[in-house]
Image (cartoon, rainbow, N blue to C red; front, side, top):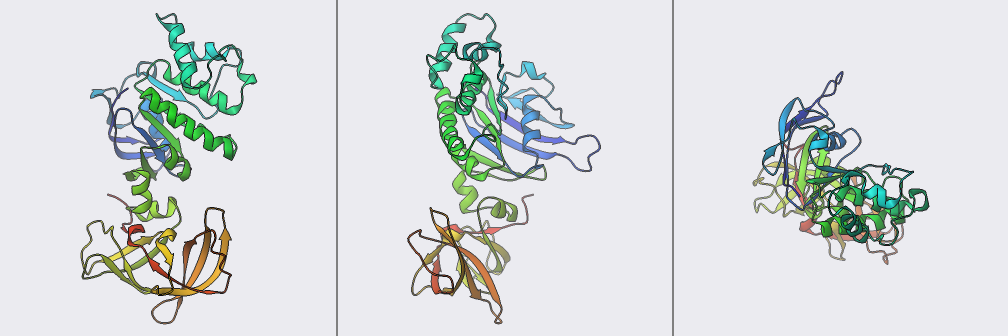
Amino acid sequence: MANIEIRNITKTYPGSARPAVEDLNLNISRGEIITLLGPSGCGKTTTLRLVAGFESAERGNILFDGKDITGVAPENRNVGMVFQDYALFPHLSVRKNIGFGLGRSEGRERRIEDMLALVGLGGGGEKMPDRLSGGQQGRVALARALVREPAVVMLDEPFGSLDADLRERMQREVKSIIKKAGATAVFVTHDQIEAMRISDRIAVLNDGRLEQLGTSREIYQHPETRFVAGFVGDSNLLTGVMGSDGRSVKTDIGIVPCRHTHGRTPGDKVTICVRPCAFERHPDGAFGGRIVKTIFTGDNTSAILEVEKAGGKKAELMVHLHPEDDIEEGAQANFKILPYFVAVVKERNA
């Protein structure tokens, strides 16, 4: 399994006014699962296809373990692919699907058996694809992608057609299988929760450029840009001025503690992201207002808190309450803000 380096890659499709991927730099460590996350048209599938060799870049380089493979044909890159529809051969058994790319190589049958065991289908090698559940088909597709010990396995939204319960189970299973295989993996999705469940790190893309690269916690807890703050999870965006202590921001709803300042200094004008989970009910909390709407989601209650701004105007903030907190709409509530879920954000990364 390889270490992957993407250096200054740019790809523009014919007739397009802007690049699908622009000056992208990304390092993927051996054995790492990295997810390309973003909305439709952000460049994530194009990036995957560039690494696989299905598309050619007009600028930049791609390296596997330090070797430049930019001009190498897809079939010579040793890349395993899991497509959205799995693309299993309907006329071949599970065993033959998995072994399709092995030819008559020595140890072929042992390798197939190892893959069947790895994906939890031992004893099911003679079944036909139409006799498998959606989850089982996904595991066969993953086994087929891993059987040749590729430099990298690439998964292009492989759970898009599954229902919610099966999708969540497959996310856990696929991550476990990839880790047991020691594979380097690139996963593509537009689903932020899916990205958080399966990834070691997440690369958030927007308009063909990298907005932020980090762990699930880093992306959520201290987003670096307005786009990341808005795309990954719910957020409240407030403007203000960095306080003299360098650890708080003076806004028009009050002074907000902030631990993740991203290098900004006292007196700087800033925009901060305050996650709804940063609000904690407290009778003496400095941020008080009226609950104007609540939505119970099971894990928590999302509420809209109406607060007074400087000058007498009103503002609405999203807050998350404990699911047992059955506060009624129209009630008054006070909160304090936890600084760990507050971060200064930029318009976008350079």
